[in-house]
Length: 267
Figure 1 (cartoon, rainbow, N blue to C red):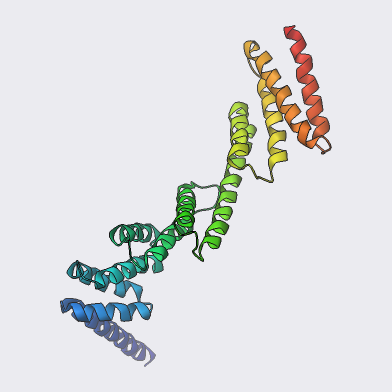
Figure 2 (tube, rainbow, N blue to C red):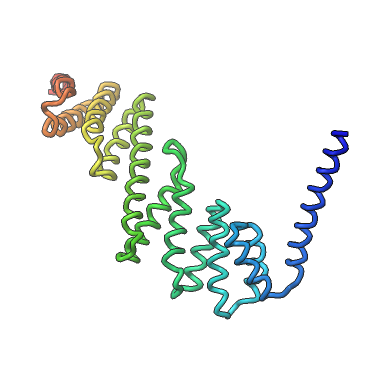
């Protein structure tokens, strides 16, 4: 008895699904642009974004040169964003602004194109291509629409993503150091000071530059040791000029003195 009831309910559910699907398929097949246009927005407002997207695709080609095309294309791009298809969303938002440069939706499209890339920005250890794209697009948005209410949000998101890039760069430099790739470690730490001038890690970065440059010097071939110990002393002096009273200062002085002693071999 229970199995019959289950089978009956299952069949009913299948029939309802088939009926619903056939109604949508019938709608798609009408070819009536006005009906498809109206229903597409109804589906969009009901948050049935995949159905809305399907209908927008059908009417877009019939609206070329018409006033309605602008709104349909913008909402079509929105359906990709709502469905978390961020690569396509960004692509269609860019196409939209290129096609309708004077549109009332342009500002929102430009912001959402950047935000789609922000949504694809991964954890700091992974490739940061989308992070860089989002930063560039948010910066362009702020420059293009300086009076927009979105500018403050753009700046906050840029700061957030730059911190991620900074964290990735520091992790890479530390990895080079741990792998005894001291020259690469030194260059990466130095690039951080240039790329992130306001970093709160400046003290640790300069400390690591001293350590990495010293390890590079003592492990270098004889012909390069003099030049590299001079570099160690320069790096140590830079650290001590800024952080002479910190916990790492004694170690840095010891490293500097060791390099000075090593230079006596070249006198």
